[in-house]
Length: 252
Ligand code: TYD
Image (cartoon, rainbow, N blue to C red):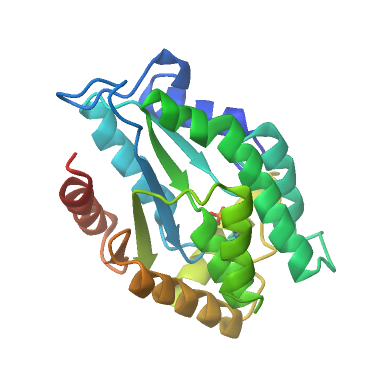
């Protein structure tokens, strides 16, 4: 998945994992017309290697079983232009990027993602499952790179019409174990001839400590939106908690 375009990423998830394409139709929320309401926006957040992508896919399978149409996507990336930006941002060969450039590139990818994928899907009434969103920018660039929350939140207001997810699954995990897992995964990717996505994974423990603290600060600030889940259990245990949170909070 590392070097595919945004639309390929969406297609991959739809056709290979869920057996349908995004173009097939609108979200069907039982008992509810797709015209009656905007779709639901669910984001997955956490440290590198915390298991977000697995949880996103598992939740996608639950929604599919229930006839809810959804788009599964990711940031940075999710569109053809965004995937080019993703490669630049994550490639270990990219050196000397200023933290502000990094911040701008995250938002460049996001603005296109909103215009091309997220906003239209929500307007159709689809669910959107998104692997990372602005909370990651606040945690990594605001916390990790020490730019602070304020410029991130301000840019989000200006550039992203301040769109807030209906639900954010924040997976809390051990720094060392998560980052080690992400590094191993990246190594396997390199050995398979795919693009090296290890630029953030090379950061030190103090960086990831700041990222984690910022995520926890966001969860405290916005407990209605953010569901903080301990991701140290098995994937199935975490999945059961995620499904329960979705049902409780979104009445799905
Ligand atoms: P991702 O592919 O989700 O990494 P992983 O699967 O290892 O969790 O995200 C790519 C990297 O980009 C990750 O290290 C976090 C970073 N990132 C930011 O620094 N800021 C952002 O706004 C986003 C969306 C991601």
